[in-house]
Length: 347
Image (cartoon, rainbow, N blue to C red; front, side, top):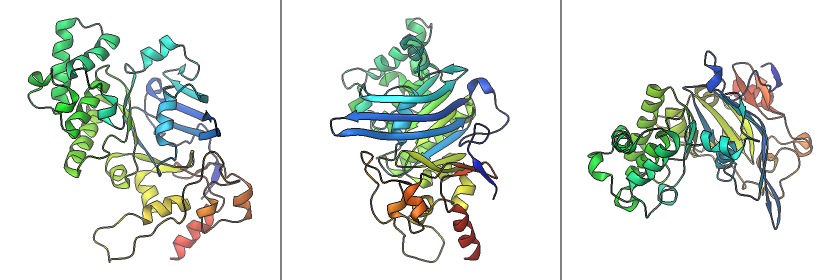
C-alpha cells in the first residue's frame, strides 16, 4: 500500500461530493490540561474532516481522548485546559472565536448530546423549559410558536403524548426517554452538525437500538453530519460511515468502517477487534490487549502503544509514528503496519 503523511487531502472522515460550507475541518488539534500534578496531554495532533450527512465514529478505551475531542471542538473545556490547532466551520475559525460567535455556533449550528442525561439535564426545570431556552437563544419564534415547536420536537424524537409530558421533570422519564429529550434539545436550534458523546451508554439493547434508528433517521432527513463517540464496535458497524480509532490522545487508524473492520492495520485496532465476540463462527477464546493504557501525565516515549504491542521494536520506543495516508482513503500511525498486512495475507 502506498503511504504518505496525512494531509488536508486525505484525512479521517472525509467524503467526496459534499458542500464545503458545512464541512468541519480539524487540523492538529491539541488539548493540554494543567493540574497540580503536571500537564496532561489529553489529545495530540488530531486531524479529520466531516462532511454533511456523514457519520464518523470515534472509538477507543476510556481515557483515549474521545470526549475531550468533542468538547475541544466547541471550546467546552474547563479553564485549566489549553486548546490549540485549528477547527474551521463554515469558513470560520472556532479556536480563537469570540464568546458571541461561539454562543451563536453552539446549539444553533453545532449541537452536542452529552453522555449522561441525568447529569446534563437540569433536575429542577421542566422539559418544556429546557427546550424553550434553546429555542429562545437560536430562533425568532414567539412564545406560542416555541410551545408548538417543543411539542413537535418531542414527537419527532419518539416521546408519546408529547404535549402532556411538557411539564414533566427529568426524573419522571425513563433513561431512554431522557436521552430522547437530550436529542430534542440538541435539535431545537436546527444544527447542521451533531456531536454525540456515548448517547447509548447504560441503555438496554432495545432502547439503544431505538436511539440508533432515530439518529439514522435524523441524519437522512436533515442531512446532518454526526460525530459519534462510543467504545462499542457493534454500534460503529451499524451506525457509522467512517471510524477513527483513538489511543492515548491520538488517532492511530481511520477509514471506512467496512475496510477497517475487515482488515485493521494498527495492532491496537486488531486488539479491539479480537476482543469482540463473533456470531456464527466456531467458538474461540476472546483475545485481550495485555497491560493498561498509559498515563497521560507521563506517557512512554515513542509510540504510546509500544508497552502493550507484540510488534514493538526500538524504533517504536524512540519515535512517535506519523499518521500516514494510504490507498482507499485510509490512515494509520504505525511503523510496522506493512508487516501486519503481510502477516494477514499469509494467515
